[in-house]
Image (tube, rainbow, N blue to C red; front, top):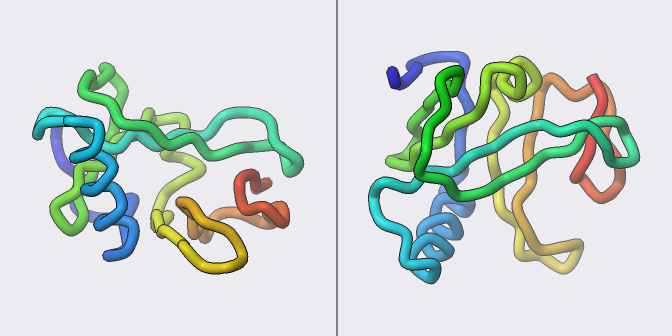
Length: 115
């Protein structure tokens, strides 16, 4: 699987730190990566999905930012191109957020969007 260099999926320093901590807690080794995808549903029509995985699929796109491998399927990548994965631990909610320049609108919870 080739690592793309531009038009990718990116990660903030805060999200990187959280991903590394979660992977360490889960006992995940270097074969694991972050899998992001888009699924139908949510209050705006499409929802983000984030998981750890260690099995790539034939149509996967792989990106690497700040030493973190991020993988998504080609269909999801069409919605996620140039998206940045962030992590918030503030008073307004704790968790991963997708900063997606392709979303025309998103819901108040930040877990779904529309294009």
